[in-house]
Picture: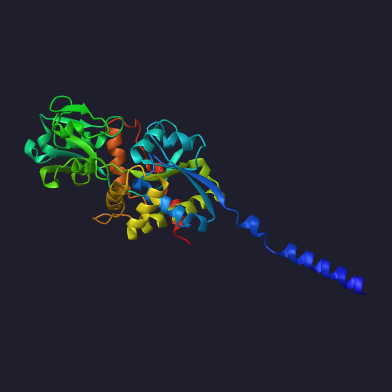
Length: 335
């Protein structure tokens, strides 16, 4: 009798274990990789914050964040299967799609362009219309199109009315007054000019957002066929949801996000990263307040970017709405 009771207890115990949910399998984290467009800096603070503060982990994601660099093309990495998600400017994504890469924007993080053209007030330049007859520096290789669209808007012939100069990735040409105007990102090169002792009041800043010629910058993309899979679509939604929470954290606690970035890479230093964090938040959140919620593509901003890309040869065919999807963003809102 005692033996029978013992066996019964064992069987009951085994049944109980069998009926319990397999927590190891059901809660195993999905491993994904995010390919950045550039090196570790506050430009990508929202993603580093999402990882450091456990926001990805809370979504059952094991995320590897891979820094970029001058020889890394995020579109190539994602299209080749080296990462599930990538960060890049929209024109670069449109160009990759135009060449056959099966990629799609799943979340637009930056609502505004950080690209500016700046000049010394002493040059006599007061605005974009005064660039006629001037030596104007800009980064070529995909960064010049906002300037070209602005010149066209002001009826300045790029071939006859202005001398365009290939700009190195520094501000020496402007600081040495070898050019009349030069390109600068609000969160990087503009700060370099100020660090050289120039006062903001000494500068004229041409803002392409105000000119109506801005192009969308940092957005999240993935392979279209990868997110077509129902399970991957859920993974993408969880990734986007956690990433956007990371950006919300950086809006509310920018100093904390700066420390998170510095822990990953101290190269640029606290002062520069803090400046960058402040300026990046403006590109994400405004002012003015963006026309769409965080992460949701603004159709008007997309059209403006796509139209400029087509006009100046970034793409040969109209981009079409298939270049982005709202499905992942909508799915990310449901939890």
